[in-house]
Image: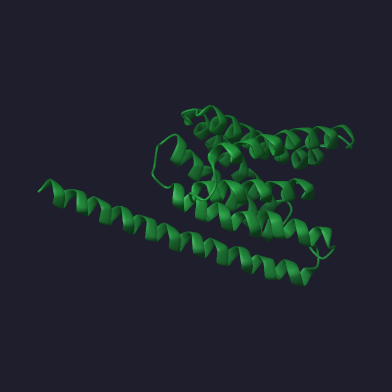
Length: 209
């Protein structure tokens, strides 16, 4: 995926995380989603037209569309106040596609960092499916996950690439552990979320008695 695309995605995901955490207005964030989503539709078209048109060029450039379409869908949903069911199903589809990218990174490219990154994105898209289609009350947890991912999978890698140090072996090894640590944070957060749901159900049962 284009590192310019990663950079822009980092900005959008950062704002989306703040919205989910109750720190930013939904409509203003929706406008930014549409702005970047439009760019992330134009960029891959340009890259495809100027590429060799082989399968791996298409594979890499098609990934940008996943983000562009998601941002456009999120932006329209927020601005129009839509119910979000369709967005959730779309996020499930993207999550499945992201799993394919994860395994391709492992078995074809032998790239552990890219595999972990795609796996984390697949998890985030799946969370959006749970919230929008299955109506799970997990907005705060999604905001927590999105906030971390906006930095460790998008913004910082893009900045390091612009500085010319991203592809160095030592940094790549460090970033592998950064991603592992981030995943552990997600797991801990998930257990806390599950525990809070149990406490909430217990309170409801006591009130019913």
